[in-house]
Image (tube, rainbow, N blue to C red; front, side, top):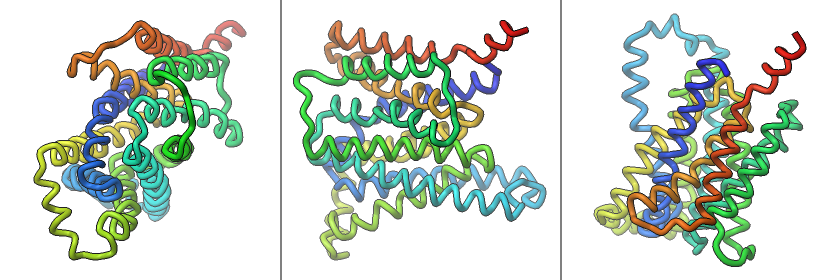
Length: 314
């Protein structure tokens, strides 16, 4: 594996860590504020965090000599931001709604991370082939996620259907980022997609959370004063959105999208381990086995199968 690919893999693992710790905050914040409003504000906050970074970047280099000054690059940035942002807004809203309607954190983590199966299947239609190690790693990850997240019987309910649609949405988002990230600056793409995702989420917020009336805005703002809601919003807006999704955009450059999805599936592992370490939650042998299987799958996915084949051929 090339040094750049190793660095990008570490960036995706860091993103998964931030998302894993943020899962509880996302669940609690959505219940306090409202699913659509919470999602919309967290993404707009993420965009606001990146604006000063972009300003400093543009200040350090001459804008006329940058790639973004090219009309083709500006068009790619606009199309990438609109496409990635729209898909991200829909997928995140579906996840937030599932949590709001009572899905358990374990089942939500398992069903959402089913994108590890959907991504390689969709990738086949786009001509992105995977080695045997990737497919074995995908199956091991799916088994590990089931052991890690699922306790008791498995039954599909309305929130679960929302989460399956959410997994499809995140799969499309991973492939969309894979397509546009090599063309444009990663931070600018992230900022643009956050603006679009925030708008996508706030449109239904007016009709549902605010009940068709701006008169309910003061009552909504008063809920932000609650420490639980405010901390959840700041964490998910600044770290989960502004930092982690930007790490995803930068980290996916040069990586197979299926490998990227496997690395990001560590989100479920970090959420369980975070609860074990920070909240002193009990971690059973079944859950430890699930963590181990996912870890083995991620390591397996890093094996440079094509390079080994070339060496043997030589």
